[in-house]
Image: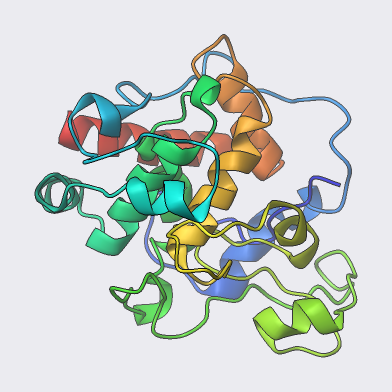
Amino acid sequence: MRLTHVLGIAGGVALLSLTGVAAQHAAQRDRVLTAYEVVPDVRAPVPAPVVAAASGALQSSESRDGSVGAKAAAAVDPRWARRTADAAGIPLPALTAYARASVLAPRECRIGWTTLAGIGWVESRHGTIGERALGDDGRATEPILGPALDGGDFAAIPATSESARWHGDRDWDHAFGPMQFISSTWSTWQVDGDGDGVADPHDIDDASLAAANYLCESGDLMVDDTWSRSIFSYNHSNDYVLDVYAAASAYADRTG
């Protein structure tokens, strides 16, 4: 079931409350994706594909085998990261996470860091929503949680002992972390994105690589309408696709 997120935050608008914004897309959450509803002519923002590698962002990217060693090898050049983060207006830990994830994602996918940044902005303001700050360790100063999935405005998804460890609610599931996974999707796509030996959805390094791998299931994001199909699979809303596109395009423009 491709029900990854319950938190939809419109890109480029004033900061709204976590619960209030989530309600905007509530009607589109509780269903299985049976056919793509793709916004016409919405494709990957240019220059999104492998921007990091093309601009010398990475000191090393010898392997994409998903191992901890490969992740450690994909060290983002701190000078490029700082320069790009400043130009984009993105917290440095988030920018670094997006760049690393774009290189560690499947090679044939061609997902750019700007695409991940677009999702990070829409979902959680790169981990800073609600006056939070994103630490150097990739974690927000307070956990980022969506509303309870208790069958009210959202699907009813009971918590499990596994999911409760991420959101603390023993009764109902929540979306969690800067990229707003729910427990079932995180269980499938969880990954250690920074080589610290832990797969943690509250760590933007891990969440970004998990999101990249999830999106890459749709195929090469630079072919035909695959980009918009992949974003739609992340959140089943045409408005969401457009919001992510607007944010990703803005980052490409600022740093191109």
